Image (cartoon, rainbow, N blue to C red; front, top):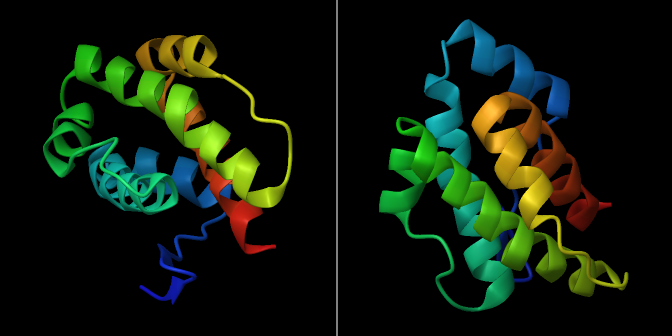
Length: 118
């Protein structure tokens, strides 16, 4: 994994996240959670998502809802600040999607992460 400005590069197409999530029956999402948490922790300059939470988020739905809530509350605004856009709070949207459609929530978050590398 390449590091750009102390932020690990984790650029994937959202469609790849969807396909790999289906093909691996969700196991890819555990890896995706770990890598996304590294990006968000580097952006925030502190640990907002531990690796333990990232792993359990791939296995347990209430933890998955918490994972996406924190991403929407702390992670997405950190990306917005980094790229110079007014910070948005997407915590409720991502939490609900994380419960009902976690792969869709991961695709949305991945598209936001990809904005860092353009």
